[in-house]
Length: 341
Image: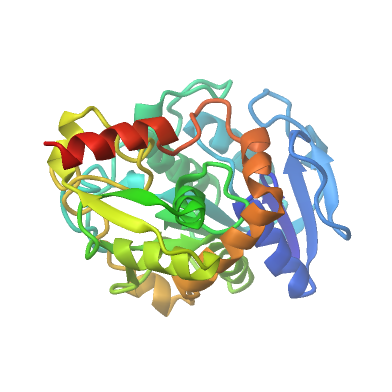
C-alpha cells in the first residue's frame, strides 16, 4: 500500500509510520519539518497545510490511502481533502471523543449525537481556540466527507498513551511512581479508565486504510481495561519502587484549586465528568481495533523516560499547552493540608 501520513512522527504519527513500514508499505509523510526527519525508508515532504498553497507539493502524486493526524480546523481540512480527492482512494481521519458534546456527562454509544459544525467552519489559517476543538473535529470529519463520501473513516480517539508522549499526561504517573515517596492520587483507586496506546491506534489506522473501512468509530480502550489504581500499581512494579499512595477526595482537590487533567493528569472528578471513561468500543473492535495490556504501555513508557524521554517531552511539547503534572512542592503542600484537614 502507498500511504500518505499528514502529520509528524513524534507520537501517534510514529505509531502509524512504524506499523506501515512493518507491513511493507510505501510511506510518505507531509509535515512542516519541525519535528525531525522520519525513519529510514520514508519519503518526507514538507509544507504548511494552514497556508493557502501549503500542500502544493502533493499535487500530481497518487497514494492508495491517507491517514490525517494533524487536521483540526474544518476549512483547512476541507482544502486539503479537495486537493487529494482524485489522487487518494481512502481517507482515515483521526478525530476525538470530544466530537460528542455530551462526552463526560453521559455514556458514549453508537447513536450518541455529535456536535453540529459546518464543514467550512474556522479560520483558513488554521487558528482555533481550545473550546472549538470538539466541534471543529466534527466539522473536519464533514469536510473530509464532502470530498471522500463513502471512502472515509473517522477514528474518534480517547486518551492516547505510550512512549514518546510529549503531553506528559500518562508519563507523569509513570515517572511519579518511579520517583517514590508519598504520592498524591486523586479520587478512588477503583475508577475504571479506558486508554489506547499510540502504537495500537496507529496500527489500526493503517489497517482501516488498507481494508477501506468506512464510518465513524470510538477508538479507546475496552470495558474493564484497567483502574486508576491499577495504573499506579503497574508503574511501581515496572520501576521496582514502593511509593506510599495517598488517595485524596475529588471535591477536596477541586476546592483547593487543583486543575483536573493538567495539574493531575488523567483525573476528571465526577462532578465535572461523571462518565469520562464510559464509551462503547464494540464497533471499533469489530472493525479490527486491538489494544495491548496497559502494563506493557507502562513498561515501555518507563523505558522511554529512563532513556531521556522527559527531556524529549519538554523539548517537543506543543507550545499552545502547558506540560501536565503537579509541581513537587505543590504536591507536598496539598498532602500536608489533606493530612491536617
